[in-house]
Length: 352
Image (cartoon, rainbow, N blue to C red; front, side, top):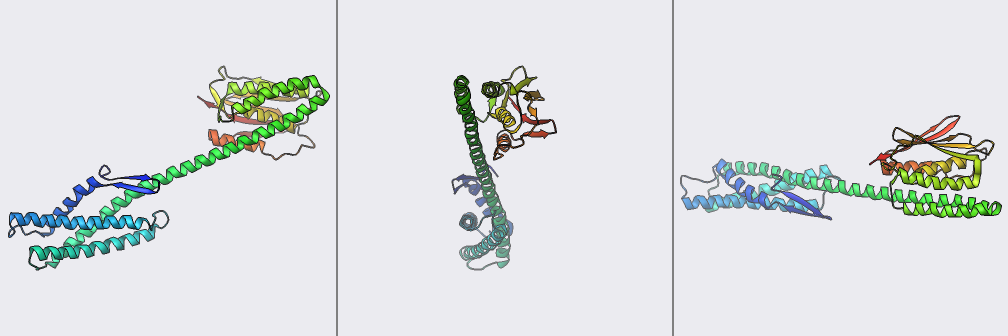
């Protein structure tokens, strides 16, 4: 039956292809119902009259079918299954049954007037009308099911497109938060070096250009290889060493042999290293040790936990930003672990 009726939705317009459905079932119901109730008198009708009588029975089925088909289309503009299901059921039943009974009685009366000289067999009319009503309700159910399935598919596609657009908008907004935050901190560092160590400031400036080029190149990328991210981290940390010297140390441990096989959101590790430097006390006599460790296809970024007594103002968006990016891109968030000695963040990776 699905092959005989199909519904296509173009924008808000619904296109119904049910020609095969009608070509088969209208003659079928017209002939079968007439034969079942004994509407056609085979004993007294001539062969021509029998053929004409069955043609009229098919005409009855045609009028009833197309009248109800029009009603279904007409009522769809006023009632929606998803918003007012009960109201639509009531209206459908009353309108379909009302039209079907009225049309059936009038057409059967016309049949008896033409073929029986006006002698109406009301018992046959009532039985035929009852069967027609039952058949119409069944066919209406088929039509409404086809419509509803297509509408549900359309709603699902629309919802998925909306969610995708929303996620992309959120992701773009989160990406946009990275650049100003990073460049602001870097310019502060550059300003400090210009005043204190101009030669280092020139090197820092060159590294900053290289690092920011990476950020721009990855602006439209949701995922980068671990290889690229580690290369970016190396360039970034060279800037940190110029600023803080031996007061900050970075160690990479247990990395996989092929770092090109694993993906993660860009600038993820750098954010955690930057957070560690921003929020912890350290000096050359008491350095801050940051470790990037590989464990069970995850990156674990850890640092000594020695929070600053007077931390700089923060909007506290760093970790939330990173977690949201992971949720949107990878479908799972980051894992934050804190104790008295260490602050660690676990970043999942994706293997391709």
